[in-house]
Length: 172
Image (tube, rainbow, N blue to C red):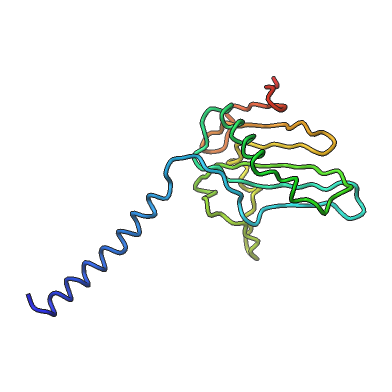
């Protein structure tokens, strides 16, 4: 084999190997384990300076959520305990604070790298993705009991089953 032939063969192998290895890495990104992370650029804090209330909304993605709704509630509760959002709202001292945490599943319409889009011709906000909302929790300074809504939804977003909890008590 000549030196030129060896270079051409190395170039062909390199051209084929690099894209295939990148595709292989992308396929391994989802290990199948459950993971929660905050969806960037979606935190909402609102309430005027002259009002006595402030509302905080945070949005999260759950990759590979448990199918059992009680397990999903426990996962959301544990995440909230480990990542308290109350500490980040120091500017609202002296005001009643209302907290909302929303948890979404990954889907074709709401991929893990989704970002809000406020484009001129189109918008894409989280309120357009309610079909993928699978859990929500809310509480306030005046009513610290956490209330949970946990959903089992079809792929199209139809609610198949809904459980409501106040703290650890299932509400019928």
